[in-house]
Length: 498
Image 1 (tube, one colour):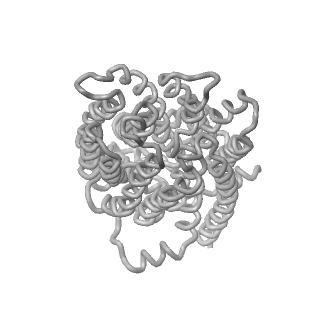
Image 2: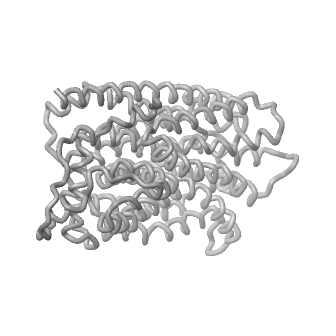
């Protein structure tokens, strides 16, 4: 048996002592229907390597299809607008805002930092709120708020006005990513979770691509309605965001034990509860002093947070590094359209590799999350170490910017791994997920001011070296987590057998 097989052969399923009871009587209650439909461990067929529901009963397939159609669609569209409204500042900056507002110092750094400060402040409180308030109310309300603030950005005439609005945009957006990761982890089983988490994460790369194309398109509106081309970007972003935000009030299903969503039948709501019981995923419980002591005395919160901090700061995504390289070039000279569209190739690579990581993790690696994480880290080291050298062939320079996208596709795997490791305590899971994203952005709040200074563009030597180091640290941390988790699973299994 391979090392990966040994790791994944022990799962939370092994810690269960019962399976659904069979009966020849026609089940008459939603609970009985769920018990007779949901299997503890469906017999795996080759079709599950294509899509994970193809080896499940028809009723469960229909349930998961409904869930994907509503929850996953809303999650990806919501993350799309979140990233669109987060990153539009970069496209606006290289498309006329810098010159129109006289931003020749480190103002772009400060705009990004103020957004990050707001984002950091809101995350953990928001995830704790989600364990007490219906997500279908909280999350869409915050989406509507950041959409309104995005509209307001088009009327800013000074850097100080943008600083204030960016802070509040970050504060409102802090609810979305950790909140939706918590909700996704409350509905999907182990063999489904990585794919959904990674599909969700791909929607962070798509808007980064789309914003470049959108900026290239709306730039031609320059002068219409008294607005510059870069100001039109904020208007169009807001128009795209508003209907998606409003849809959340109707399609977000909350979590299984309190869901009242219109598209799930009573027996399907029981399906959701039964599926999470079989995964060992705990329902909501009160916060107590003993619970906080248990959470903060465990290795889980510290190691998982460290893993995500290293991942989130193992890339140049906080700065438009490829766009600034193109903008700085004099031979050849690139147009505004080219500066906005060529860097989208990096995000195309991120989308493809994110999906490849999800499918390979669930199938080839039998649920192991660490192999793609290590691969992404190695690609990062190769790319950014080469850029740190700087005096390299132009073709390899371009290649390094583009293939660096392979290192940005492992967020979903990190989150899926955290859901699985913290499955036996709902509040720990919510706190760990929120803390992972929170602390990653705490570091991101100050690190760009040190290593990604705008005045050093495009030759960010300190930034490229830092990313190479954090990528190496991410690889080491993933190996440590793997060993600690294997040890804990083995300990739990021995306890059950004893």
